[in-house]
Image (tube, rainbow, N blue to C red; front, side, top):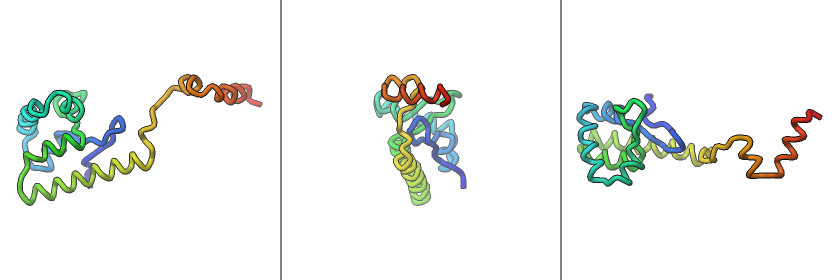
Length: 129
């Protein structure tokens, strides 16, 4: 089964190409509609939930963003697809919650600064006793 969501920077996201494919829409039409939705949602919501990708052509979409976009797709068939996406978002979020993936990343020097008592441990490890 194709992976329809992924975890990026501790956020569960999908992208506009995946959404267009699964809902049987043209990616260009989806992007065009999404640009209007983004204006209606406001800058703060759009910046948080519709994330530009490096290529600049497709967008990464958070769960909240997907809920807004999914309003474009009506009908029983589309309802089943929406549920599949919602379930995938929930499963990926559960992985983040269960694994504690939201632990901030730090460089070793930063860890020593945050916990001075660790300096002793590092000192002894470097001595190779």
